Length: 285
Image (cartoon, rainbow, N blue to C red; front, side, top):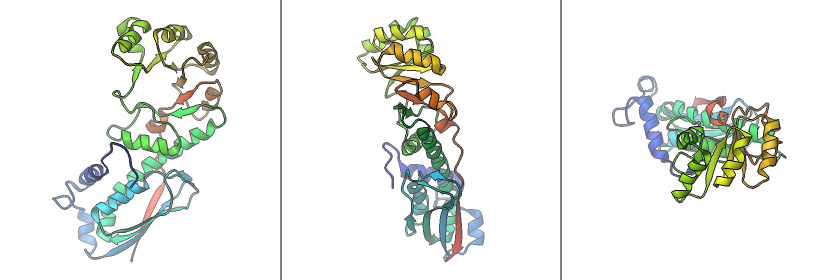
């Protein structure tokens, strides 16, 4: 199983299956159709295949769903996490109890399709900025309850995780500044709390010098056009890292990255990635 720090795979699998089965497997939850149609001792073999060109992500997680319902299932993972493969590629082969495999199928596919979709879109963004020196960042625009999984997928696709949540880094934004009444006072309050790494969002070039003078260690340049970004980067003179954010798409990310910013952050990686087209076909063993 792929390790995802601070993520309880067993609890996630159990909760997801319980949602689909109306209760915990073996303790009230059940698959009514499979119980009626599939003999309890039937054995299936299955092949999971990608119908798209993808960057694989979440295959070990998918395997965990089948293993949860059939501990004796035989699973062969055929593609590594983060591997780019063409349409028609076999991703996984499995053999086990037919009822268990059918019951776990939808949950397993939902997860692998979602995570693979994110990783695939992320890799496309990474390819678009190759050679610019800029690094792709993800954001907090994630599905509630799935943040650690989705950030694993962006990482698998080649992005850098930045801020897992509100707890692990300071990001002073416009509303913080409005309440504090100035960038200087907002940054000063953070420094007074003993925090030395301070990101500040700036909407205007005129805010750059006050932010750096106050002690900002990272500037988020929000919703600036490439020409303005280029001027901002020149003004910063590499004193702190710069991050372009807001309105970034596959069509414009190259021009944004070429302005010389250190990072480009993209909410679409997790907010708008389409699910990958991955299927799973079973046959009687």
